Image (cartoon, rainbow, N blue to C red; front, side, top):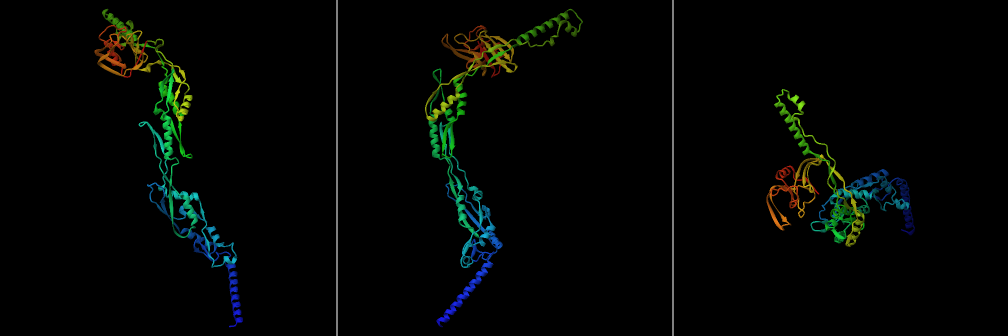
Length: 526
């Protein structure tokens, strides 16, 4: 074949190819205007020539076929985490398909490239699924599926042990947290495709925001604070020292999570309460109310009623002796009331009498100032002597009324003991109280024990020797060895002859013993 013939054949071939290419380009320009260009793969699936609706449906089918096998991988030190596996769809984890965008992206594949390249079926064009990824929504979903693997971390605690007298640290606990950011990044990096895919859900340790080491530092600081000596002075002398347990109860531990530590402080309110109650019990005096009584003398009323009854009986006897035929009603009208009708009438109460004098009390006046000094010095670990300032608390006057109940009064000046029920004076007894060297105590007490008979022992400061009085009857103890009791060994009632007890005649001691119950108030005064 000549060279000329070869050239002509080549020109014909080129012309045919050019014609075919031109024909294809004309065809492609018309056919792929509203269809997916050739060589286009949607999430790995060939969608060349698909219409918009077909591309949309193809994208939906691919999305629906995605399966995610999630396996929990425990990267924490928490051994109690269960093994969890989940098989989920894209919808299950909170991913949503944008089908319209997916179809448009397929149609517009390589649209920014040269036309020949876009419609070239030999050039592969990969398009991914267009999805809506909400990081927060996915994280929430994943946590819900693996909630059994989630454990909260616990801060260490610092508490005071009264039994051991020291602060004790309870260690904190490591929790767990899912690395949702890592999972979301892996999902985004590996574009969704049809079929099953394996993913690890990484479980990381969640450390407490305050370490055990920092808790121990707070404990050491608190230990130093409660070793601070806090003493209270009164009249120039140390009257009271704050006990260790009280100081420990004021210490507070406030968690500073951002700073990773416990702030140790002193609770002002607890210190103020301590100063008002515990310290005050040692340093101040409570006011003693003054007691007054408007007495109703029932002994006099009973005596008057008895005399009236006897007078009525005498009148009735005289009427019988005179041979009167008058009826009882007539006798009653002439001689007064019948004996059976005579009743005890309560006399009008007398003027108020002071049974117990009131005493003013004292209270700490500068509690706020003392509380501030206590806080400052404890946190600095410095000993301090505190000098309270006092204010007077006036006493109140209380009147003994009918609801006061049973009570016993002993007047040491008059050597008299009264038995009362409220404001009604029931009995008046002449007694013997303590001698000058062995005086009877004064104050308000309560009967705490009773003995029908008992040997009583004591020390006689005059004779300077111990004594034993055998078989003492009807003893009502009201304070220590002090008691009301019968005295068979003397008859000097009305004078001060006892060793401190209140001596009574036996019938009267017996009446008090049987009448007064344990808990009955006894007021003894000059």
